[in-house]
Image (cartoon, rainbow, N blue to C red; front, side):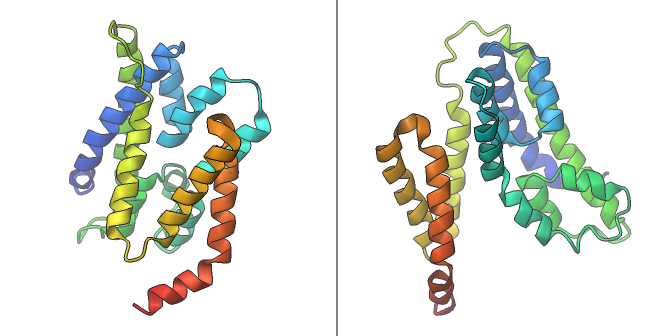
Length: 226
């Protein structure tokens, strides 16, 4: 526990801020505080939880909800593949490690080795547990504080959008070639113009997936040539 905690301190600041924002957003959208508390415990996917607010308030559309969920969280398939060797030999802890693997926990557990004398399984377990506790407590606190909010909260849901913009810019900065990012931007703009703001999400994701699949080999060759 003591070895894992220092690695999660930077996550604490981000998760608490976003978690509180999410909890307040749920409350001002008409949900009781236990909604963000239970959703953060069971879903534990920040982007999906923000999107779930509009899905819960919208018309009943189970197929669209399933597709949106799969699209938003599909990256976890690749996280799981990357962690197959890491999770070997962790026993019953493996079940929770799989469930609680978010972007931040994956980043720490994938790149940081447990200190000498510390069990690898317990180290990854507590990294994952601490990160989820930060999110759950932040979301619950936000749901409680939401009832005390008296100022205008319009635009509060933009917090997740702002986070994605920051992630995109950070990824852009790290890329040697920006082909994949430009494909995402181009497909989003074209689908937005064709389908409008209410219906462009699914076509955009489908276009990006198709284009990246078709252009994978040329992009890989370009990366190898540099």
